[in-house]
Picture 1 (cartoon, rainbow, N blue to C red):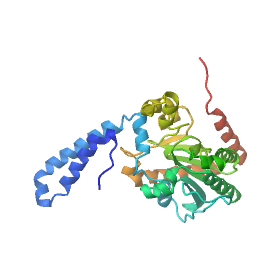
Picture 2: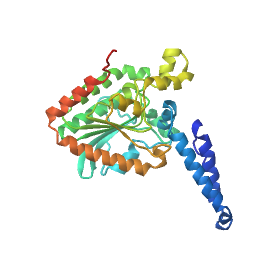
Picture 3: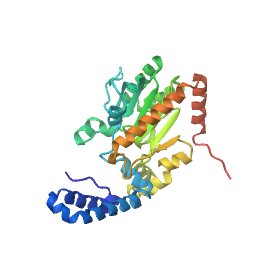
Picture 4: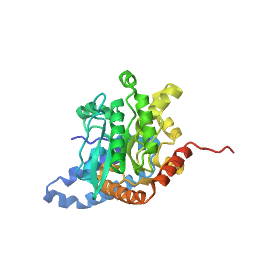
Length: 319
């Protein structure tokens, strides 16, 4: 199978492919080129460090969209046990782009919500490329209320280019569905932890993004609009998306500096898909620690702190 390669990865992927071919040689042939294999491995490590330690915003965007990047269900299967997916908004239908249900996190019952992209073209089409319709957000609202009723901490996985922008979605009340989620999450009397694992596009991401703790994977992004959409509106030219990505301050580093998020979760060089178990283990630890901490906070203080967090976003001072 041909390896997916981003433009800036070309030098290292070509060497990795060569290394794989050498390693597949019979043992007898391999013994004569052992030194070459060792040198190649060291060269690859150096190039890895050089490329992935100095990524631009647009390059991080490409990693966030990598087709092999772990999805919500990958983390759910790895981190939680006894997950039961719940379906439907009890009004219109079920949206496969937004999934959720109760599960256990090391004996602690929690409620999970998340955007779900596909792993191939067929699944991506069925899940609308992770772009929910209004019924997806209404399903999320139903599960939020269920979590509050049974006092379950809420964990949200964000990974969407945005809410579906089609006419049908607008006819079914897209804006109102997102607004209702924002209002409900701001007042839920349970701990809420947000994990941005890939794309965090516009109101589609924000509809699951109001919480007490917000974390981003190192190569994820969070933005009011996709860079392509921004470039299209500002300059009528989508080819300037990389310029827009820099201006939007959408990377985890930018958002931590602006105090929008609480922390950055490191990824292996090249992205989470290169060592999923390492990233999954780190996420699990982050969730356990923060749920334990938040459960020790009174509901009044929890809600007051959440309100202050929301009010602080977008604040600025003129010099």
